[in-house]
Amino acid sequence: MSAEFVTGFFLEAIKTTILLSTPVLLSGLLVGIMVSIFQAATSINEMTMTFIPKMLAVAIALIVFFPWMMQKMIDFTENLLNNLPAYIG
Image 1: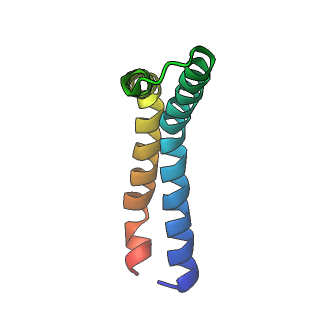
Image 2: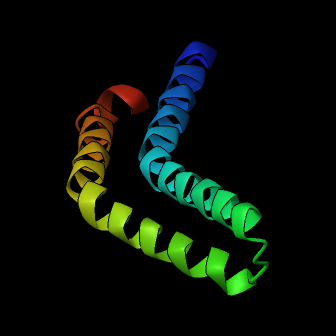
């Protein structure tokens, strides 16, 4: 196992992690910005008004993107397990 292989493997793992977390994080970010703009326009400073919509957006994003996320995780794991003999040898 060479240093280039280990670096490439960890780069692929990090890339997959970022790709899987992006839809959930972006949905929370967009809803947070919209709620902040609404709060600034109406001068309402209620903390639960920020928290609950973000929770709902993240839950909806997980429901919507879960099949795609699961397929990406399965592809990564299959690639890892199929090439395991080459990694060891």
